[in-house]
Length: 309
Ligand code: BDR
Ligand code: CA
Image (cartoon, rainbow, N blue to C red; front, side, top):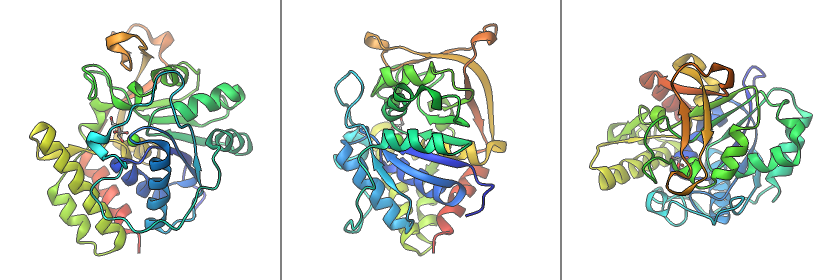
């Protein structure tokens, strides 16, 4: 693998869109490891799905199982989107792999301490990252950055003002957003809703004619079906690849640095409060992504899928 690729740890809860983010990460990053977390489905399912995707992609990347519950609140899952098993829709083969460890937090800490310029790319609830920062505060200054999918500058999805990943563990999100990390890049719903996929794309991916192409086509089909059912829309946002692409192809994104904090209270729990007033720059802690060149980055996604033999 070429050394000019960004080194990342992909922290995920697959998850249909997480599975697509894994494919992009395999092709465009120096993927140091995949860590799983309770989120879209319970930890046993998200770990299994991470292993399945790495098996389908035929990559030997390590998978480490992480937190099986949020820091304080009870676990919340998204079976209505991804199915009880977290990967509802695509046909998957029998699993022949097992996790390298059941201590994702220790893996993150050890890897960041031992390696310069590691990007943490969390695309599920932020539990593992918060636990790693709590256990080893020294790694906060050591990471290249955190590029996360979560939050929103406006409305939410699972709640009127909360996006799923932040809502599912708001206390962890509060720790990460308040960590003081030099670079925190946020791909929130305001961004990912511009990154849309449709049935034509599903057909195009299936037409690649490989196992990975078929899998990706079925995943996109499942995403579009869900959007049709829930919103009557013929397109679906594909959230999680955006957090990977923001690191690998930053030229296709536009951001503004803002002060962002997370609510942990009552009806607004899980809300990312983004200060867009423009005169609080001293406290700006997050590069909030506002723009993506959708067509260019969809091509990167398609080419990533096509690059698997
Ligand atoms: C986020 O929630 C999950 O359901 C998706 O995988 C994505 O990470 C979108 O709100
Ligand atoms: Ca996810």
